[in-house]
Every structure is written in structure tokens, then in C-alpha cells.
Amino acid sequence: MMMYLLRALSNRSADHKAANIFSETKEGTSQSPGNESAVAKAEEVKMLLRLFPIWLTSIVYSVAYAQLGTTFIQQGKAMHTKIRSFSIPPASLVAFEILCVILLVLLYNTIVAMTVRKLSLLQRMGIGHFLMILAMAVAAIVEAKRLRSVNSGKPLSILWQLLQYFVVAASEVFFYIGQLEFFYDQGPDSMKSLSTSVSLLTISLGSYLSSLVLTLVSLATARGGGAGWISHDLNEGHLDYFFWLLGTLCLLNFVCYVACAWKYAVENFIW
Image (cartoon, rainbow, N blue to C red; front, side, top):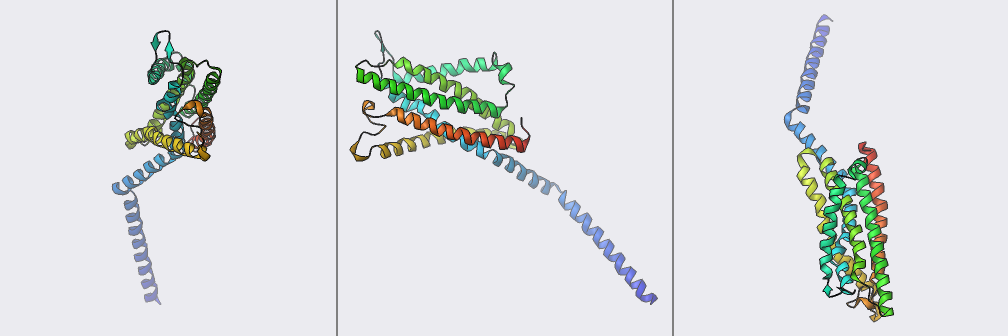
């Protein structure tokens, strides 16, 4: 009996030592530099993926922004470009938009700074989204007015386009500056450059998608031999309908953005 008890105690002691060795080995493994680095990288990738829904909404915004170098210029070509003896090249109005951006950035960092800094980066981007909806609406109204002026025999001056260029400039200041700051601020520490580069990728993707949307709308609206919304001769088309379509897409995109931004703010305690 005594021999049995001694043997049992010996086995129990050996099991206890083995358990301690296994526990120490496990703790040492979990705290090893290699595992810590792997966990840190996994968390950084998760942080980057959390930005993905907001990043997607930026692409639709860039589709509307791409109209600066496409349909806005075509619209300007169909308008009266002369002011007395001076002729305004339609593409030159992009320079007006850039000038507006420069001036608005100065205001953004000085006069408006006290008010704007009270808003979160997500809210600033939301203002940019809303202003782009307004810009598409203004472009549609100007185009409808231009078509009416053609029918009345009094061509509309290209200066009417300045308002839509100004609204786009204001939208750009709030959205793209806010987007760069947001992706830099919320991106992982070791991926700051990558996150900001990914945010700018939306501009190129928006340009490609804009060409696709233009092609699809042209094909869909030109059935039966008609001119369609986007015709070589804008006087025979309805570019205003296309701008209303983009405005509607921007509105739906804005709703999606608000939902994504609210979810992100709640999950990451950003207010």
C-alpha cells in the first residue's frame, strides 16, 4: 500500500512539473517578438480594412468630380463663349475652379478654421458629399436653361457655368482635404503613406468609372435611332438629364456614406 502511495505521489509530482513546463513554454511563445509582430501586423491590416466602406463611397464622388474635365467642357462649348471681343476657351474654366480651391483653402485654414475644426473629419467629408450633389443640380439647371435659350435663339453665356465650378471647388476642399487627413489619421502607424495613397486612388478609379457611365448612358438612351441624352450635338440631347442622374447617384452615395461613417464612428469612438 505504501509503495502504491509513493508511486502515485511521484506521478502526480511529475505531471505537475510537466504542466508548469508547458505553461511556461506557452507563455513564452505568446510573448515572443515574432508572434507579437504577427499580431501587430494583423491588427494594422484590420484597421486598414475598416476604412474600406468609406473608401468605396469616395469612388462615386470621384465619378461626379470627373465631370470637370469631360461634360462640363462639352457643355461650355455649346454656350456663348464671347464677352465683347474676348473669347473664353471652355477648358480654361478649370483654371477658375483651381483658383477657387486655392482661395477656399486659405479661408479654410484661417477664417473658417474656428468653425470647421469643431467638425470631425467624417463630418467635413460629408459636407463635401452634399456640396457635390448641389453642384450636379446646378449643372443640370444651367443646362436646362441653355437648351431653352437655344430654342429662343438667344445663346446662354458661358459665365453661367462659373457657379457650378465654384460649388465643385468648395466640395473638393471639404472632401479631398478631409479624406487625406482622415486616412492619414486613422491609418496604421506603419501604413500612413499607403493609406493616403489608397485614398487618392479613388480619383483615378472615378475617372475610369465615369467613362463607363457615360458609355452606358449613351447606349441606353440612344435606342431607336434617337440622339440620346449625350449627343455629339448637345442641342439635340439632354445633358441636363445626365447631370440629374449623377446628382441622384451622389445622393444615394451620400446616404451610404452617412451609414458607413456613423458605424465607423461608433465602433472606433470617433465623435
